[in-house]
Image (cartoon, rainbow, N blue to C red; front, side, top):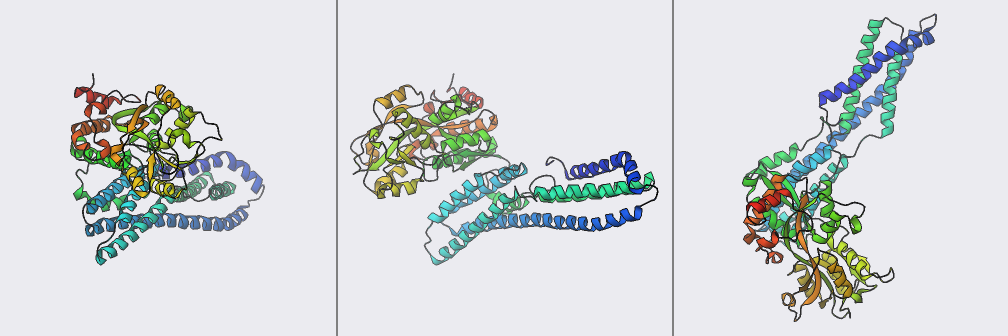
Length: 559
């Protein structure tokens, strides 16, 4: 019923009760009149009982109308608080130095677009997306990393954090309202009570036309009351719902003037953890695409996520339009192998290859661990469950053929916590699937004496030979001040989407990134070796999206 207009929904409720009333008058009233009145009219008794019942039922209706109205009013207050905090934060960014000022303003505009264009349509479908939380996490990281230089900066920064926390609380209240409603048992009481009210009308002894008239008035009143309670009980769904007007006002008054284009479709690009490589690479991609927003009509939004596995599932569900995904994860999902045996994703499509990612395992220099075989039974961090490293480790461990007693004890710590845990001996190894040079790896070397683990041996050779998405490679020692390279295996980071994704958006990605590939390769060390030939070559783990394929053919990059 959420697709109906307010008038249509009201007509449905009123019509339902009116039909029930008329059917009862025609079919049930003659029998009830005989049973209740007999040889002598008993209207006085029926009216007396109905009046006493009506008082109780009217009180219940009144209380529920007030309660549902309060739910809607509270939601409006939370939305206003979230929007006003957002506006205050946006204005307060003027106190921050560049480039932080521009970065925060861009992230706040991105969050506003997401709320209006993604959150609200999802709310109307009784869904809560996590993309907004991911964007707030990125803003939180920038705010917490800032160190004020003056007393005035410190004061403004404290206020900024206070408004940020207020906005987070208000957002949680808004999301909670998506599923809030009065208990089902109260709806049963309401509907049964309405039916009993109509039954009393059937009991009255009167002429047909007056009974139809009074019955119709009562039915319409009951229908209107049920409509009112239902509409306010679901304040984010249906025609009588609270909209994102407060956020639209903030955007129009505060942010609109700084956007490159106001009429564009926002698409989300799933990346990885904020401290990893995927996220800054995703930011670079979106920054380049957004330069041509007026040309393509597409606005790109980089979203920090747990990683490849999460991105793949979010593309499948429609929560993400694009995602950076490891080719081994994509290949397994498309072909229904490994963890995807029961849930293949044959609608997954490639857009372009970005850079090679190498399996990188770090241990303490004094651990005595040199090769991957030395990790038997050790404590190893492989990142969050939704990340590609977690999936890759599962593939490697299966290839090694370890028994349950030999298998490593895995943990899912974030990058910063894992670095500290390795240095203090809480874990024995850290595993990433990452592009090099990597700031994350550099920070680990700086934190304590660390060394790479060789990923090689007969079992690894067999794994690579049987997996078209894997390659043998080496981590260049010179990137980290080491004398020798470390043998390992690798895969590719690939921008992916769904076969159902809008061709216009896919073509925008392909055209903009190819046209500005020289600029893109300067945005992150992992992209330094980027070439147009490799971006559009034959290393795709799953088929190309037709729109991307057409772009590359038009540019003479594919036959």
